[in-house]
Image 1 (cartoon, helix red, strand yellow):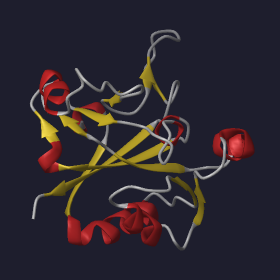
Image 2: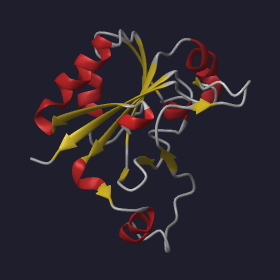
Image 3: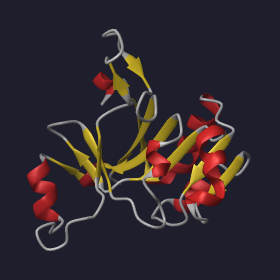
Image 4: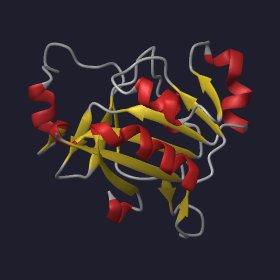
Length: 171
């Protein structure tokens, strides 16, 4: 992921709140969009408590303008990561819709080291996707980029131009 211009930070579970606070302050994020549930939601809420936080608890129509025009960063959980491609796996749901990772100019994703898989087939097998395929799994391998325009590499054309990955070491 680092080779694909993602900022990867390693931390422990006990230091997650302080790591998120450090990232938010380092990048000077002021307006943060978050989900409403998840294993690390309390850490996310505490780390962003001194900023303007919008929890995704209304329909997109209620705050679409704010999301697209004012939010600096979205923070999400992940299902895991894939080692051979360097991709994150997100499984959006009603508590953490995909727009949190796709719309703001920056995205912070939290992934457990113990949830890293060797390859995509292992993800599907270990999560029983043959019986319960997610309706909307996302694979993210780095910040959004394209070279469509005059073959010049540009970031942020189809999603966040900045990806920060918080890798939680096993304790």
